[in-house]
Length: 108
Image 1 (cartoon, rainbow, N blue to C red):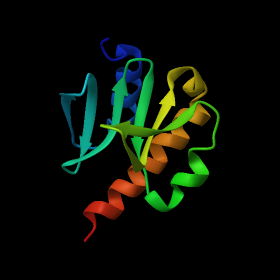
Image 2: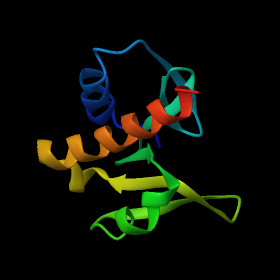
Image 3: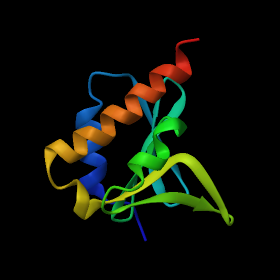
Image 4: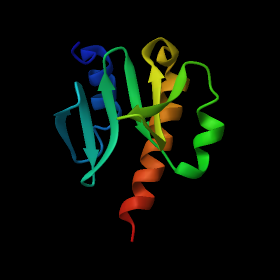
């Protein structure tokens, strides 16, 4: 299944103030900020890369789950179902968390 074009466009719009690169990977469209994967638009879900220290709190939100690849859980990577991103407030929450962590990753 292809990634959600609607979700990809929302992410693009949210990141217009930043130099980004888009990269197709794992059936999703990844948005790279400062050379690091920050957000992805997938099939009916968005993936956010957030501070692993916030993971346990944030993954408890409705429509969220930990990213699992190859049977391994990735702390700091959360899938959010697109239906739980309908409000701008919810969408902006995840974009903000991803950008804050991206800044930590690239500030050193």
